Amino acid sequence: MPQVFGIAFAQFLGCSLWFSVNGVSAALLDDWGVEPSAMGWLTGAVQAGFIAGTLGLAMTNLADRFRASTIFLWASIAGSMANLLFAYQASGLTDGMVYRLIVGVCLAGIYPVGMKLIVSWSPKLPGVGLGLVVGMLTLGTASPHLLNTLASSPDWRLTLIAVSMLALFGGVLVRWIGEGPHGIRQSGPIRWGAVFSSFQRSRFRASAFGYFGHMWELYAFWTLVPWLVNAVMPDASATETSAWSFLVIGVGLLGAIWGGLMSQRWGSARVAFVSLMISGSLCVLYPWISITPALAITALMIWGFFVIADSAQFSAISSKACDPEMVASALSIQNSLGFLISIGSIVLLTQWMDHLGVSVVWLLIPGPLFGLFAMRSLMTESAPDHKTTV
Image (cartoon, rainbow, N blue to C red; front, side):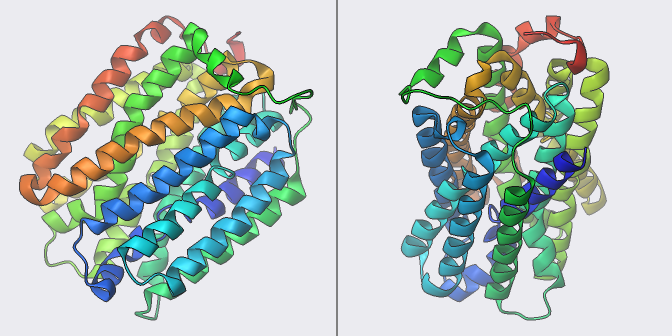
């Protein structure tokens, strides 16, 4: 369906805001004269903003009461402006974190709202549609590294300008596409906090807790990628590091699409379980197999493929397990709590990476272990998405 592909493409454009600063980290840190650990705080600020935004959407049910495409458009406009202000107004870590916090709030109106739009156009195959959306999120996350690689100017601000323009176009595209025929909007008074009733459903709870374990690993891994590349290729230039980082993160697009397609055969729960098990195994094994650049890059590519392959499947399970009138709110609260967890792992790993070396990835292990344990009850539900009932 062309609308699904259009929304997924817009998601890619909008989510390029997420790691726009990470894509220019080397030049930015040199310009500001701060330590590499500052990137952990800047990334954490985006996550904190996203948490605040998604929590607000979930608690007020606003994402289920207003046109999702309109929310997406205004979030894209505001996020682009905050990204530009970071480029030309921020002069250090403190004010930089403020602008990145605002970007995170705006992303709350892009990512979960975009997932609701996908479900409104493809309710029978959420694993496939959401797999494409998460793939676009992954490509959007990686795109600043690509833009930085292709930039002909050493001015890192030009990369942020390009990212902002992409996000603006994405918002306009979604507003033009609009909502699908299967979207359900709430009516009546605001049901403050009603979204938490979703956790009373065992299937939603198992999926959400599995997602929380996944989120301990995902964004901390993405944050570490440039550093992990440099650790095994210390002589690589900033451009080469950006290029390899783009490939390691960007391969997740294929992983997310693979997860969506395999959900038709295995079911979303089994795809999520297998993917989380593989990425968790790489958390354990990576320090021992990163003995040469070739082995390390190969391992990172496999890790980048599977670390995101489960994400959309958790959302697919949750979107079908919650009240149909609460889809955007339920996904928002799941995202909010998951990203809150990710702040802890990002800050923890960026503070310890210089002390532990590549063994710092062992600090990611608790996430996959917890996620696999939490979702074990879902493994009895192996039917493909189009046969699954709620």
